[in-house]
Amino acid sequence: MERIKVHDKYFRLYMPFEKIEESVQRVADQLNSDMKDVDTPIFLSVLNGSFMFTASLMQKIRFQCDIVFIKLASYQGTESTGCVKQIMGLTRSVEGKTVVIVEDIVDTGGTIEELHKILTNAGAADVKVCTLMYKPGSYSKNIPIDYIANSIPNDFIVGYGLDYDQLGRQYKDIYVIDEH
Image (cartoon, rainbow, N blue to C red):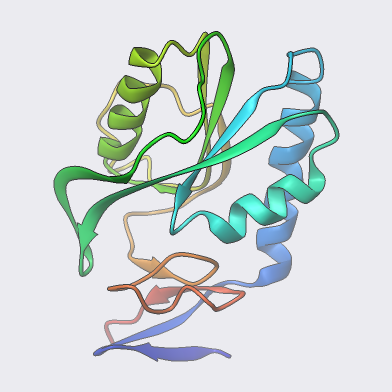
């Protein structure tokens, strides 16, 4: 589909599924190289948005790892609230482990900063950040983003797990808001 409607807004095709999958493979290749000698790293998938990215990424990982989920919220409509709420916390100990945060999108960095604090306080030995989409023009934190599948402008997108007020996650492609 070239154009979709979610709630009251229209979105146009931004990134087709094939291009998304190529970028996920590129990140998986980097992780496969960097993590091959790490003792069972933990992938921490941030719900709900990263579920599709996490599923695709995990199918391409070629080393022993564990996966756990956490649920945080910081968006309302098309804007970040600036406040990160923990809805579902860690379900496994990360003490002494390397943890790779798997995020759908890194925007201002508020969620990453909160997750880094949670993981450090829980005793993680090392924390890495892996994201499907990165907005360098919006990012304002000092925590490095280690694995970036795609860098994008500061546009609002939906699809491939990303939502607009909880709708639009199911699309296999990614769509950008269409103001015209």
